Structure formats: C-alpha cells, structure tokens
Image (tube, rainbow, N blue to C red; front, side, top):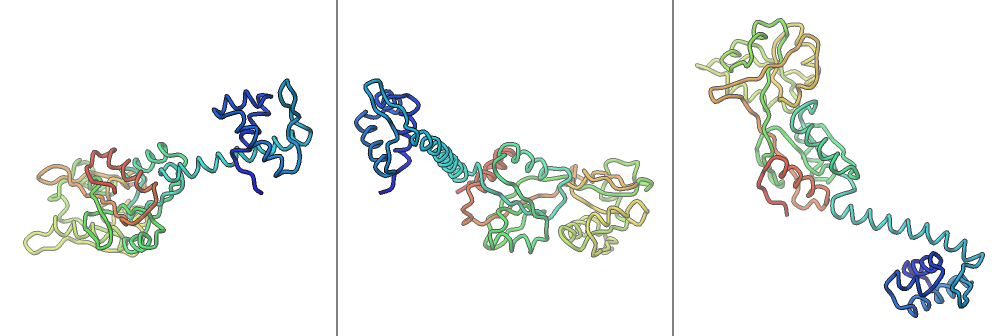
Length: 303
C-alpha cells in the first residue's frame, strides 16, 4: 500500500512540533485525521516513526532518518509543482524567436533584453535565418514566433505589425555625402548599392527600386551572395553604399558610418511584423505576445 505526500507532510509537522495536537492545529486538520494518517504511514514503511507519550512525540532512530528523507522528497515535489505552474503560466520553459535582420541595436534587441529581464526563468533562444527557413521552423514548432522585415500576410500564420525602424544608409566615412544628415532619397539616385542576396536583401532592393526609379532609369543595385556583415565590412574601401535597418547600426565597421534616410514626409521607416501559429500551445509565447503588445501600445488580441 503506497503512502502519499500529505502523510509525509503530517509526519514532518509532528516531528517539528513534537506533538500531534500542535501539528494538527498548524496544518488546520483534526488531530484524529493527522494521527490516523501517520499510523497508516508507519504501517506502510513497516516501522515506528514516532515514540508516543503523554508529553508528546519524538522520532525514533529510524524515524529521524525517515523524516530527513521525507523533507527532501517534499522539497523536490514542491519544486516540481512550482516549475509546472510557472511553465503553464509562461513564466518558465522556453521561447524561440526567429528573425531575419541584425539585432545589434533597435527594437528587437531591446524587446528581447527586456523580456529576458522580466522572465529570467524562461530560456530565450534566437534563430537568424531566411524567411523560408523561419516559416518552416514555425510549421515544425522549432520556432515560436518569427519577427521579419515587412508586413505581408502568409497563409497558415497569424501576423501583426509590431514596430517600425528607421531606414539607414551605410556609407564610407570619406564619401561626399558623409557630411550630410539626414540624407534624402533624391541624394541617393546616382549611387551604387550593395545588398546581400539573402533576407532581408530582396525586400530592401524592392524598396530602393520603388524610391529611386525615375523616368524609366533604374537604380544601380548589386546583389551579392555574401552576408550583410561581409558587405558592410568592405564599404569603407569606397566600393558603394548599402541600406540597413536601424537594428544593424550597433555594429561598427572600419571607415563606415550610418546616416538616416528621409523622404518628403520625414524619416523613412520600415515595418517589422511578428508571425506565429495560432495552434502553438506554448504559454511563454502568449506571455511574450502580451509583453510586446503592452510595450508598444498595440491592440491585437491574444487567444
């Protein structure tokens, strides 16, 4: 016949208070209930845990060892319950955030650091990859939410616009435009741009084409199969300019500076959106979405 956690708690209380009567009062149960459960426990373990007298109770030699082990079992059980409750409420467990843009600065970096500080028990992991790989990760459950440049909807995923960041020009420090801040789209029409072929290079290329095309003349945009960092690290040699989001301006490269781009209506901005599966049951995801919604004063619903 097995014993249960409640019986162990009764025995520990009796050992601590030296009396079934006082232990029962502390636990808020009848003395007869406590003493009956301790007697059942002694029958299960086939030995006396307590010496009983009119003055109260004391543990036997074997009972002392038993109570010591029981305390460890109770502490472990309590820890397990707390962990399960925390995980169920999104205060523990894990959260994986996918992204396709740099996070050396900007809102995504600030959001992830703020979330980590507010939820230290949740293991936060980041995955930087192309859009297709991130959506595949959402499908398999390896990624909980993907935060991507742009605001296009994709079948099978819930998406919400989260924030905007400034569009920045990366250019050589000795470039004639380096002394200007901000720069305007009209300042950039005769420049050569180098962009990575991987995400988010194609989105930035499309934005440049729309902004800089004039009278049938297309902007000079070269797509390279190197990383964003690879392109930025060579711009100081004067081979061209590049466009990045504000989130990439925290990294420094030799002889490269950043300048914001403005249009007729002010600073040029690019939207970042979050994508997730509505059937993702990770409680940490729901808490993360609520955290982002409150941080940026958004209004989307979270099931």
